[in-house]
Image (tube, rainbow, N blue to C red):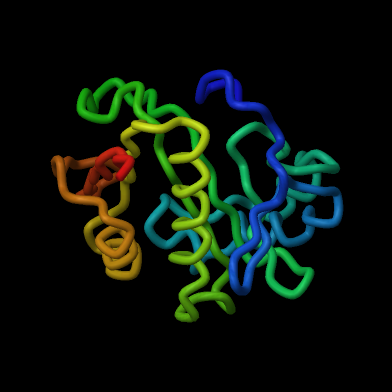
Length: 178
């Protein structure tokens, strides 16, 4: 994984009780367009991307970069989880740490899929980069994302203003071996 060190990419698909986390394929393009153009999905992310621009500019195989996982349920993409290096200079507490982000289609909300997928990705990261702290940023107004951050073990580091809204930065301590 280029921005997370020397981790080999792509990994074998990660299988949970209900989900498969894998690299992107051409068959995911329509779901990515839906995900990125959804006003519901982007309510706390500055608004959706224009569908016509996505249709025109999205590559045949979207999000096919290291650290990017498609979340699949019953053979169909329902979301996306991404790991990358935090590079936001105005947040020194996050700088250089692994950062997790996630987006799920609205029909997949409320079923625990985001928690299941994020837990699996964090477990994978603990296996390939032991001792790596992870950060997560969300808007404080996004109650669902705030609940997920707590469930995943993130604790508040700081709050800050961005995009005309209060943001929350949380950190998950590195996993320790028993």
